[in-house]
Length: 381
Image (cartoon, rainbow, N blue to C red):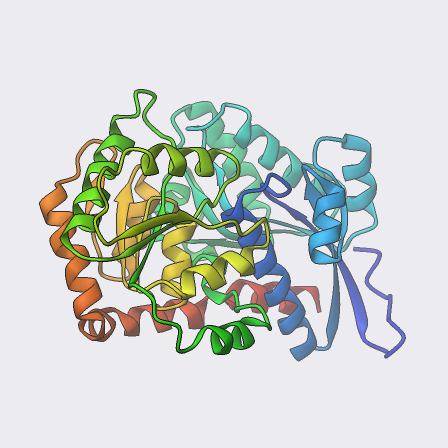
């Protein structure tokens, strides 16, 4: 690799790692992925006697540097990417749903292109808890197959992703199935102080709500508003809307809030958390239950053992819920208000039963979430 003999002032060997993903776009879920990877690399590096110096490819390098205190270069400036890769000891691609063509035909060529560039420069590449698919354009299979076969380590976040890679020709015995990295994200250091300050204050049960735009006609959000309104009229709750991707999720939340109707003794509000994923994780930790459409809202809830109901708009929602023994309460095409009210009521009234059924699976995912970092650090040593 040519750059592996650096040491820091304490004598620890230093490894510079470029990290590629959907970072710098004010999406709490993707920022949480980055922060989780940074935490895991730092922790595992210390354990194995390495200091990791990350260099993040970002849509907003200044924001990324300010938030995480790491080097960042613009993800669309080829010269900056090449210089970062040349000075590095390897490239991490992930996590998140990077290798899919549902949102754009440019996504797979971009991320595989960055991996291919690193490989051409002689740098090892690592796929970190990737979500693979859907891949609807068959010509993209060879792009994915080529870079994955040449990667030093490949991990995906669900069995379906592993199956897809195997189908297109990546040897199955080279693929680790691991949880989303955010399962290992800790609360911010100030969380205990905040919790102590809030203790004793009389509050309604808090139902976290994470929604996003999906159907162009808004029929899905209208159904969700009907169901949430029915819940609010059936019992006194605090509906706390959590925008994971600003400003679009905030707009979707406000649209729904305007259509809730009479709330009775309940209240509805929107959290203003900013872009720090740990602060959003803290928000989720304060919920008594959560209704989540965003994948990372559900992952945050699992991270903090908050009982949850999921709304499916993509197979990744079903796949994650399945890993902890759950199925969606509804989809963007259908949601039965009465069934939702009954299910949410059960979570609020009997959280211990939910924990007894699902906590073991959650604990297993949290334990496994650091495996990619361990493997990557071991290879870099």
